[in-house]
Length: 321
Image (tube, rainbow, N blue to C red; front, side):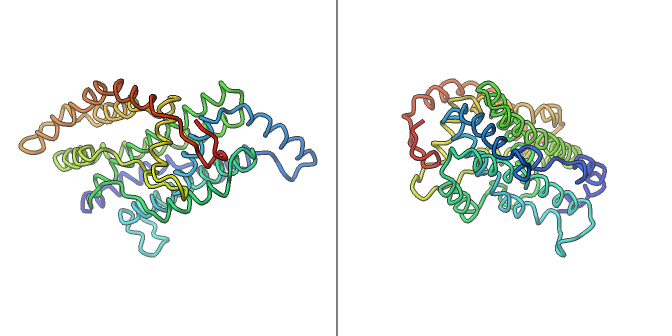
């Protein structure tokens, strides 16, 4: 916590990565205006466009939305870093966490509204999945190490940006510009959040390189736990795995992307160039080997995943993808 506390001034310098509320987009900006006289026509056009989205992409979108809606779990996991005991502390870490949470909150709201308005999914089943995920909790695998928690955040913000960006591209290709615009907006937020956590960890690497590298190794040793890992719809005990297979199959988030994120972070933080000794040096060697290791097995793993049989998803009324 001394290291985290020492970053207060640096966090202050990077609060500009939060968008002022009056300049921020809101979910309503990207949805039909239900107060307009032509709201029926707007909604009809919106739903017609959404009919172009494939069931596979719809399943991935629901999984992404469910993950975003479990924001309370992620905010709680970072709360101890902010030391925001009163709930309104003015310290930079506390202001960042509140601002980050406020921006992230719009993501689930927007995706939820999109899915509800399209009429394409079983919203009660989706809502039950969100309820289960928040209730089941979230474990980043940081094992009490705040440095590992921030490394995890940097990884996940990049992964989420990539995932939403790929959904946007596929939606555009399939003819739903509304969904494409929605996911582009969300990916833009994630890019700023990724920049913040990547810079913060970069500072940790400068101030405590041995501790930061050991924390990074500990995170990768157990693999990066996905935030939606404990999702459950009340019936499918392997729901996340089935969702992840579809995501891999259509190229939204793949094992190759996982490997590239690790490689990107190792390069961004200059891990290979740090002067270390003892356990930290061994951890450094381990980390630098990981991108190649994952890339070596990526095609084989991807091939096995795409061969998985199709699954029925209650989210899309029992449709099989």
